[in-house]
Image 1 (cartoon, rainbow, N blue to C red):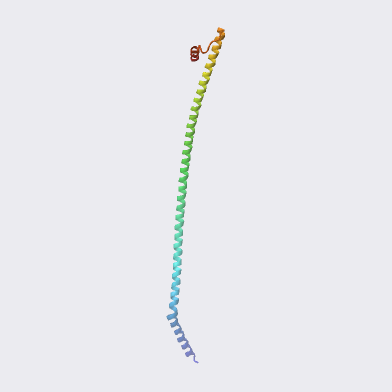
Image 2: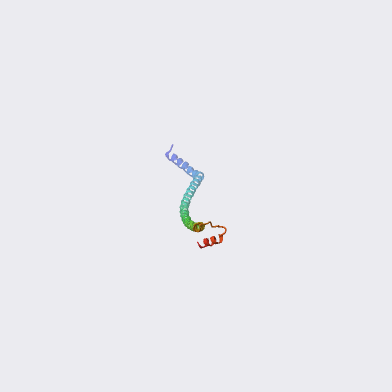
Length: 156
């Protein structure tokens, strides 16, 4: 065997192999590589979109949290105002009730004073009759002298 012929046949076989590879195998490999590159690019783009959406979600969450805190503060302020109003209403109600109780107590006291005066008048009238009876040394008829006794009661 000749080195030239072997070298030449190996070169032709290598050329045929290259032509076969370029013609039939290479397009499949290029398509697979391009598909893989597309998948990687899509994955990177999706990751970038996810990162951006995560940032937006974080901003939205912070905004929602700020709004919730603001609403909570407003609710607390309203509750405090309502509590103050309720305390004021309770004070006013208690004051009104106290005044009503004082007026009722004064009226009851006035009634008791009038009853006591009336009792005192009757007792004084009885004492006056008893005193007059002792002075006159005779019995005074209360029915017969009712006009005189009522005028004495009125003067007392």
